[in-house]
Length: 379
Ligand SMILES: Cc1ncc(COP(=O)(O)O)c(C=O)c1O
Image 1 (cartoon, helix red, strand yellow):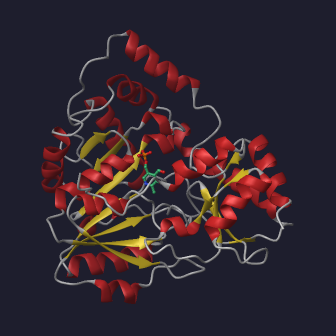
Image 2 (cartoon, rainbow, N blue to C red):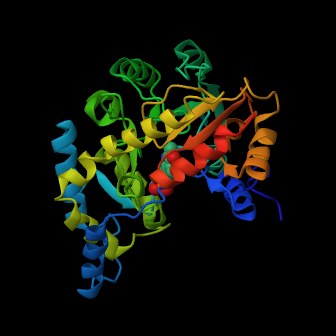
Image 3 (tube, rainbow, N blue to C red):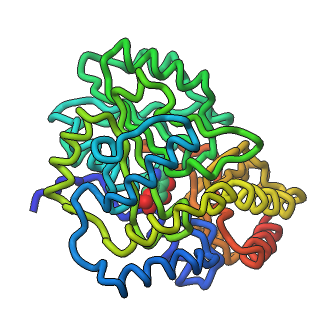
């Protein structure tokens, strides 16, 4: 069979998680919480199932859930979103992004992404017949090289994908970043896909700059979210896309004949639970505490921390410890020290290696203690 994705191999998260399991290692590799989610939310879903909410949901998503999301967006960002025409519930954030690519990419279209990048973007673009144009964030701040972005735009450029707070770097966009982006998107008639799955995981008194707050830019944007990240239930694979009506109309044609709809009881359960604003308002402080706790534990090691103000992740340089390529170093950490992390080169198409590892701090205190005990021994 001729492969549609000949250069794509098993995701680094699967590889590292398998290696962690084989060696019985602490896993700070894949980004998922190892603490329980809300029992109240589980109860809401149970209730929905018992009440018979088990058949196909509306293809755009359970109406009450879309209404609650529109209320939340108004409350958080003071933006008016129409639940009927602007929101579609999707089976996860990744699918939401995939559908946006499918909606806009025609064969040969170029799509710009920033690297290091979450690993689904590249295969998604290629699968949809697009050409990936990666731009590397400036190391070590991981800032956006605006000149390089402007220079990368050609008549074939169709879209840019941005991700704030960013996985894997934890970099957060400022208002100035969005304004620069807006100027570039509008003056070149591009589309934007804004991956905002970590909207609540933001620290150091920073505020999430959603593209929805910028009407001219939002007019050309698909904004993608994940309930898995917000409610500590990544295995539920439930998310949503928010877009202007004309874009959403096309998006729904793709979604309708892929997943068609999403898990009904979970949508009903989340809709009920969403009246509890504290559940999402408290997430930032909770994760910030975890980030700072891990920082404290690693302060006296030779690892050198890179800045992170968002997401589940923080990155560390290890060139004060070793010159090994990051994948070799990552393997050695699992085998010799019992700790799994992700080598940063895995997030670059060209496997750019700055000797950096990414750690996930969405873990219990016990896991962070055990992980730090392993990392403190690394020499
Ligand atoms: C940047 C980014 N976007 C999207 C997703 C996917 O979200 P979901 O699990 O809802 O598909 C992830 C998950 O790790 C992510 O890190």
